[in-house]
Image (tube, rainbow, N blue to C red; front, side, top):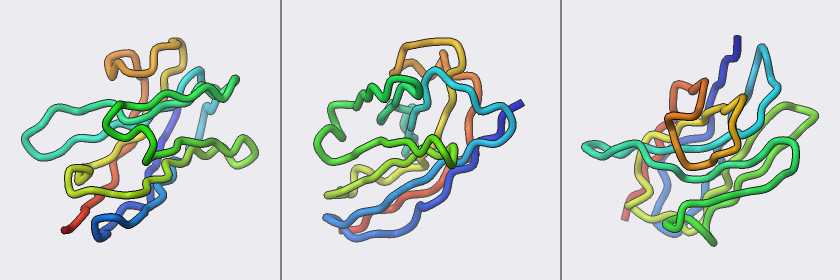
Length: 123
């Protein structure tokens, strides 16, 4: 069994930065770890993901060039560095673990989810 716990959310001004962390406990082997977000009244959307073994990264077009996903193998952590934040980035951000797949973007293929951390970007 895996537990994922996000942290690092908060309130930031537009143009600012935040770094989210996702800590995994229990079973930690993973093919893909991803970040998704969900804004009020909107569907959950893919943000970024990383293949744990290879380090291959993928990003949604809306965040490419602004967000960076990274991993710390020793600490079993995944980070989402968010720069140049915009009000449209306001959402609850979730980390997720896909144990068996290689697809980044499909939420249906992820097996475990964290509780989410709120990111609010003010103008």
